[in-house]
Length: 108
Image (cartoon, rainbow, N blue to C red):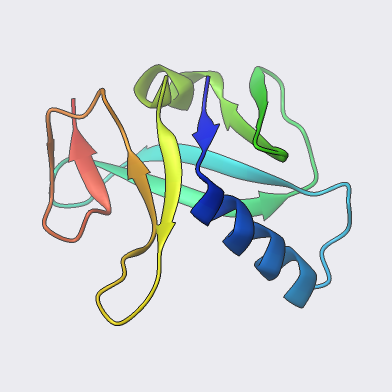
């Protein structure tokens, strides 16, 4: 399962409204090689399902990830932090053994 915190839910709704994204769009999360810790998160809006997509809905937000990425993301919570010291969107990933200082990459 992938989870969505209230803070992320509110920001996603705001972005979808501002970008005039239709109801057929969802949040796509994936993991790719790269970053200073070895793996990086990708987050985007999408409206096309792919073969082997894993689909979750939490807190009113539909989140989709590919099967390979889900192996790294299982039980992860998408969060959002704003303000002067805010990180923007970030992932609270219990599978990560370490993360980089910027929070955009991780290792398992």
